[in-house]
Image (cartoon, rainbow, N blue to C red; front, side, top):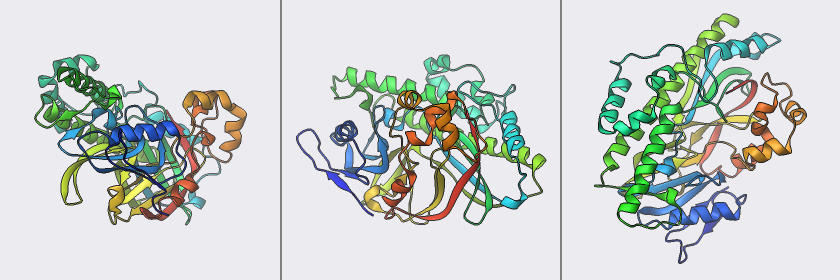
Length: 398
């Protein structure tokens, strides 16, 4: 498949929006149009097949910008992304009951929004600590927003919402470990802080926007360089968090499973982030809000909802998508709507055969609250090819 529709420019939309799905509502289209009207957006806006309404910018959007960045487009879960490893184990090597494995993972990885380890996982002399100290020196107000040492104690923790750890099997019955998390509480505070600074920058220069969350920082402005430093730190911290978490999970698995080795690391990839890239002959900032990089030969991870399939993919380097693809299935129902619509009985049925939580606390993550992953994948065959198809057998939620 290819681009499904193009939202053409009009008086309130400066550039086109290229959309890889027909499953898009009016409010999401309107949000994409507002982004495409900003004066520094470059070439066009790309909307992936899992696109849906977000805060400020649309989830599943790829935004190229010239000499300016929108902090709310990156969002507050800076560096949120995936990590996956294939093990030398087969399905036949696993025990009949996977309950002990799920419990073992839950015992070594703190879960939930405020979850943290008892002790700091890194010392003050660590590069990530020293870089954060430098940011705090320039922004003491940010430091006051953060609990002391929380970032060091939250390394290797899952968080809440749609973050997860899974044990999966691929089409060859090979065992995979896959996890999804970001920059935890510190990333949230960094995002909120600089979104606030960007809004004040708009007020200072009397720039009126159709959505205050589209407030931006321009090159040469007071906080532009500091935001780039802070968001880069948040992205590096998120990657490190996933590495620490994966190490803890593998250590726990070694207690319960036969001896194994790692046979393939798919990738440790962000899907909420910004970086400088070259597209259409120009160096621009690429903000992927719920999208992953899919340059030619790039390996990536596209998870489905709990109870659905996930995919290891290889990028095709499609320039029209700014070498990007979807980051998952994409929500089609809000968390509150899902919780009101479905019951624990529905959740039990939808996750049959998977060792996971089956209680009202995770009903908002029920598979039916998401778009069908098969349709999402069919709509992006020009962006990626499937390398492996995974199915969950253990799922751990925050």
